[in-house]
Length: 235
Ligand code: IPE
Ligand code: IPE
Ligand code: MG
Image (cartoon, rainbow, N blue to C red; front, top):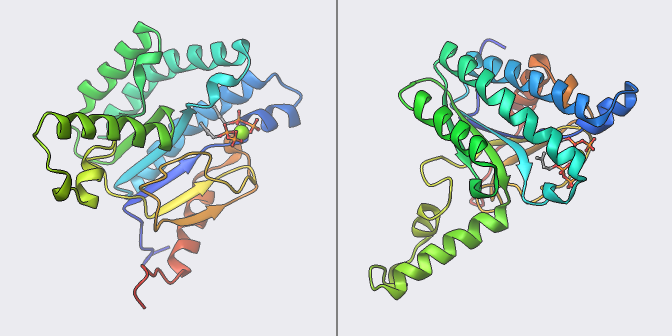
């Protein structure tokens, strides 16, 4: 633990809330509540471990397809936990950012997001990035739309477009690429998460359901990351 190299950016797909609830004989929404409570703790743990950026997938562009009842319960949890998260962020010097397309949310949720980002913007510790109504393909599509408008307006020369140009049109323009991606609950897919940004990210999968994923599991993932020989195409 002493000489653990802590990755600068850890991205998490917090999965398995529903199965955790089922295993405990509880309704799915109580699984999501347990997941939110666990997230609060992991934010604090990650900040204390010295992680620079923590990005979590909270709600995908595909998650609207879930039942109205479940989507409604998730929205209620966002309302409540955004206020709690403001306190956690202030207490831990954490700066909050959002990625995704927020306009589909109700106005009070958008206000809550804006408040969280504004109130924490001068914090100098870990950056906590929440992906809500986020999809990697949607992010790239929105970015390309803006880029195309700039080309049409004459402010961007198509021949001058580089990978950095494209990066600058993404929601993550100011955020470095993830070094380590963790997905809980045994699923081994990306589910449209950070498709551009994870070109060289190390992937770590665990069977643990998200509400049961604690600091020791995060440390274990970082230890395994430390054992890997990171290559970027060169050698
Ligand atoms: C992850 O848990 C939380 C969200 C996607 C919002 P799930 O709700 O996907 O839980 P499972 O996969 O059904 O167990
Ligand atoms: C991915 O989990 C999205 C979030 C964790 C918010 P899902 O549980 O929705 O993904 P799939 O549908 O199993 O791929
Ligand atoms: Mg799931």
